[in-house]
Length: 170
Image 1 (cartoon, one colour):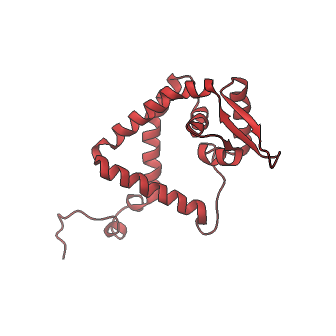
Image 2 (cartoon, helix red, strand yellow):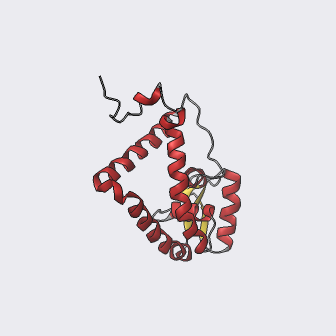
Image 3 (cartoon, one colour):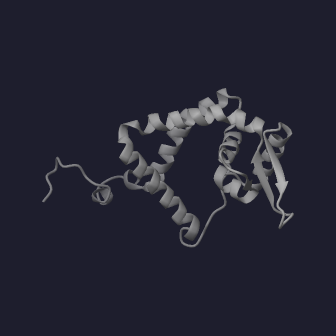
């Protein structure tokens, strides 16, 4: 039998703790909120909106993304993304290209100006991530990132209970 002073695991708390103390979506949302909020101040100081940052960061290091893929990566709905891409294109930060096989499909790429605009923020994001993960050590940080990537990929492939909701306008 466990002594009362021993720490509980998440599964031990199911019967005698608050529901939220063990609810994964709650903790993922809390972590995302606090970590993102810290970095979004940097984004604002760079003169970008969070949505602009997400689009440009999604294109960083990419040879281009379709509108559908960019919606998923940037967590934006298609109409919102389309308007944003038009604005970013007007500022010469991104370019749109028709694909050879399907003229209905559009590939979005970052321009040299877009890459230059986002490069410093990507460096700042990497530094921010290192600071956030520092207390966990290198091995635990890599394991956390891999576990989250696996979790997301699993749900992208199968969806929860067969339902895959559209990305939000967060």
